[in-house]
Image (tube, rainbow, N blue to C red):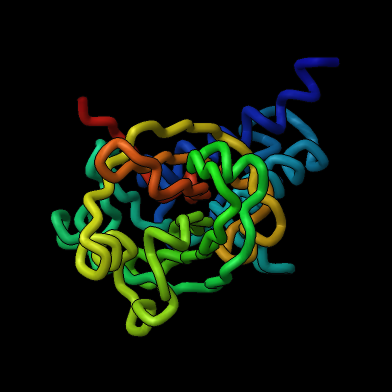
Amino acid sequence: MVQAELQHLKIAEYLIDCISTGVYKEGDKIPSENELCRQFGTNRSVVRQAVARTASLGWLTSRQGKGSFVNQRPRLVSYSLSSRTCFSDNMNNQGILHSCKVLKCVKRQPTEKEKRYLQLDRDPSIYELEILRYVDRCPISVTTTILPAEKVPQLEKHLVDFHSLYQVMTGCYHLRPRRSKSVFQAMLPVTSDAELLNIPENVPIIKIESFVNHLDQPVEYSNSRIRGDMQKGFVTF
């Protein structure tokens, strides 16, 4: 019974492997349900589950009456994570077209967690930013960033023609941001993030919580959700 339940997963893995290795290329039609049934010695119900799973992960598009076709795969981007990591510098160093958009900028009171993370003794206000970043015009990450308002006064005035948060921090406020810690977690996206990143809800993302200091004082706390199918990260020691 367990083997039968897992059979559609094995077929889906086979299809994904064929696409990854170039056996089936972008736009190619994969074998029909009948052909896959014969190849794997199974029934059409199992094959349909396998194709549906592969499609739900973004590898295929099924067209009624025509079959299933291989989708264009997004570019896999290498991302170096270090104490001085900056998205725009990472992309520029690789010659990759990139851009970003500020979806939200609000000034508000911090939560208890934010006060603790940023070591705010009093009860000052903070800025909350939500930034959507693109590679080759394809959304790759959405980041929620928290900054103490006293460190970045009138921040909203510097977000016109926005290109890089670190450029704003260094150029406008003379801060020297250095990442002190990052926490990684693989997870599935919430609906709002899946919509922003243009991915199915069952495609994994990489969540990175980062803590950034200026002269050993906390100056930024961020929560990034990154498409797992587009980023290959490595850590520099």
